Image (cartoon, rainbow, N blue to C red):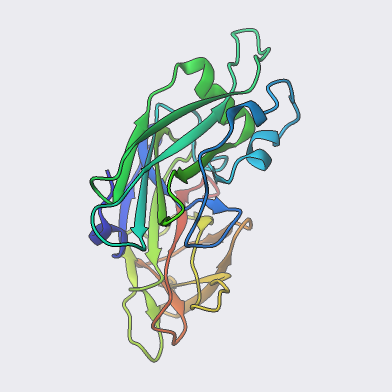
Length: 280
């Protein structure tokens, strides 16, 4: 499901102009910082009749935002890395509670509910996938978020990393280019640009759609992404892209994407949607 080597390198992939089923890795928003020490949730604490938008994400210990990327959800997969402070085999178990509600054909909804998966920690990494009925996965689209709580059952076992992979129908046309903060930062530590080929003479919309970069161990993020290309007159142009604001370009060469910095501990990824538009 997940590959740390792939996650640590820059990559890009293309989506067709029509909606396509894709699998994306999402970095969760957590209520606590790593390492996580979260006990198994008491399911009776979930207010099944609280229909307020966003309640599930506020109740859960973690969530991922899928609102910008997916039209539907087919499968949600989790991986939890754990660490035992004692000696010998890891005691107890780890798991995930996933929160949803059923959305009926007419648009009405059912009560909030939880689905759980857990297992013993013979392996320090817990992994499991959820394939819920379509009515329940529609709640993820309605909320724009997938809410969940990762946990361990032994207080000497903490969670050191949580990874989430979601398969569903993409709402993004064009291409997605992913820039890695550990590989594609130009500065004192070197780094490489990410090259994306486009057709010369056409106008493209460039939109940052996801940013989970971390500047260094003290926090912070890369708030802008650099892009460079040649214009028809032979001049090289440099522009800065920011989340939520599309930038329109008419390149006569490949697009070169990069981050600027000099911190060797930068982590995470930033994704940009490259889409041909009908201005010409």
